[in-house]
Image 1: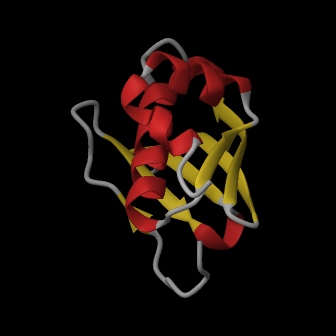
Image 2 (image 1 turned 180 degrees about the vertical axis):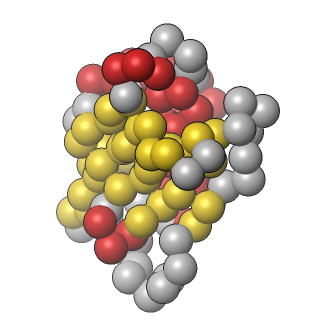
Length: 111
């Protein structure tokens, strides 16, 4: 991902009211409900790969599908804005991609 995009990418609110924001300067996607940050997905870029390294949702908000929304939006943004290969170092991201065949191509593109 290039650092040329000065403004964070923000997705439209989902049906749950969640909004995902990409903060490229921090290498992080954040999940917001209203004005409260309730989740994050950290990544790093190395060569032609984007490594998703950590996913976290506020313990009080777990079990509502918010982590799934966060990862889906982060992967959609990665697909749209880059041609990087996704490396799911985070166990949650790896499991999520395993369960969603339509995202398997992100694991091999660019190779």
